[in-house]
Length: 275
Length: 90
Image 1 (cartoon, each protein chain N blue to C red):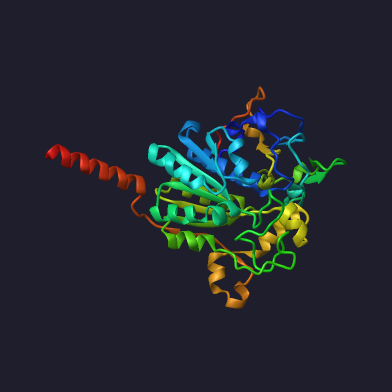
Image 2 (image 1 turned 30 degrees about the vertical axis):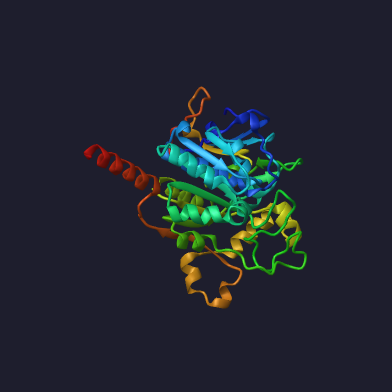
């Protein structure tokens, strides 16, 4: 792994705006290290984001970037990919952005299996707007709109993406940075819709109300709830409550959308010439 | 290093640790998770490589730093006139 990733920064934007200990910076580092080890040029990468703390990532990197409307990172990314399939399109989303506001776009992008890498930074809360609970807040955890504990079930994004038709699905956490770097690298190189969910922290909006006030406490908590997929499968139903499995959940090769579209175009053109 | 800001260098004959105090937000992640307790907070809370002799170059502080404020380098990868060689792989 090549160490210096500062060449990808828009340095005038630093120091960045995120709170002390925010996992977004750790995930950004992992994405840049993955891109650096692949060796892609800056100009062939497009990074698209929606709205939220995590979506500010596009402002700090010197690729082709686009900050779009809330939850609509994937539709914009789909448009970019269809217009120029040679581009490497990365969509970075937060948990609310991806699973709530953009939930429908997420499952349909997975269903199409279009060659986009979706990186979801899951801090389990709407951090930017003041700590409202999101579809990924674990049951029983507190939010500013769940002062007595969240009674909703949270989404299993990995299972959702896998069943919707994605070709690569993995989940990691910000504690194990080399693992998420590896997953992101694999996802970037995968032809088809690839999803990497990263369990992240939010010491301000999530931590304060859940007695995890410092970034260190939050990271220790993330470490304690994360178990590898193999270990998780051996746990009993009671033991699985409150734990999050990490690892690679799906890695298959299925036909990709832009390629199928190109093939149809070529076939029709040949048919017409034949007539 | 092309980063602007208040750079503090800590080094011995093998290792160079650079802390960018302008970017650092003193979150304490590097201090707590350093397996060899190389890093110690100074009076302002910024990390200081007090026990640099113990550093095992695990890079965990650099990987986990959310602010890109700490950098650990092996001395062999530094060219004599101070310009750093970016092409070395781990």
